[in-house]
Length: 368
Image (tube, rainbow, N blue to C red; front, side):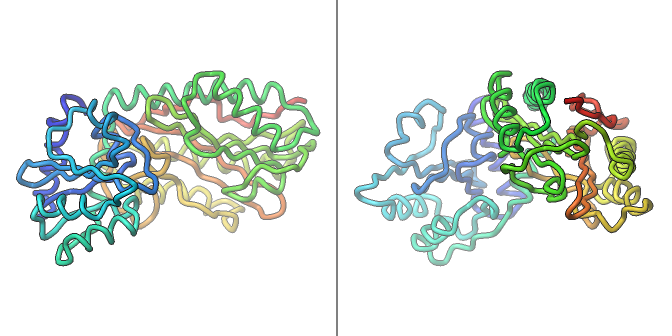
């Protein structure tokens, strides 16, 4: 998005018309930050902005945030409040100004106490969940969005290279995680996109494993799932290596997952559905001797959030336009033994797809 805040608000006012509501209400988070171009925090203090179908806008702003708010160019009325007096009066004035009978909110982001405060101020207002429509405005990435994501990915890949070059047998998962984190920030990350996963051996069979005190050993699978955040956008990369050597069974599982990953790149293009991609990718795994070890869908959208629309899974018949970015991350997980996941960040184009991730996907043994 570009232009002034008032110009950017038009998109949300138009969405309110399309949804047949009086206003779209946003709270701090990725949609809010996209609009105001400032990372306001979500905490115990309610903070709210309305984009109305009739073109008006209004906000509830904690008093301690007023100075920061003054820099973003908001032209509507602001109802501020202090911790000492509470926010009830601000909500009463805000809802009276809106005069709304029906509003749309982000169901996955708005917290229950904010919902209750709205209903206390306007008991008859209808509050609908428009998470899909509101977040859907972010699905097609701009050139600036893609540049930020590419920056985050480049930082992540450089950090991974530095990390695996320093691994030694006997290191713990936690030591490797700490090394990865140091390398991410040394390479220029502004933050983690999410808490990184470093998992070895049997722990790698848990899709959302946590690093612990386990020492890596020869023959272990060693899985990294991590990403930097840069200019407000996320990277999300998974690579699985083998330590010292790859056991025959592990190598066979790896090559199966790699074939599925390559299928994801092959079928992705503008006009296919999320179902189509997952069906093709998962189909490769199902046709292998390892079908019983499938645990996850193919992937999810990526951008300001590490998980956002579209969700690449069977049953999601959403047509994907050019500019959509998703994670192509098939995996197989053998409980008690090993897991293999290979994840690329992919942008859909009119003629196919382009991998934003460039780190090699061929089976790699860390000689240490």
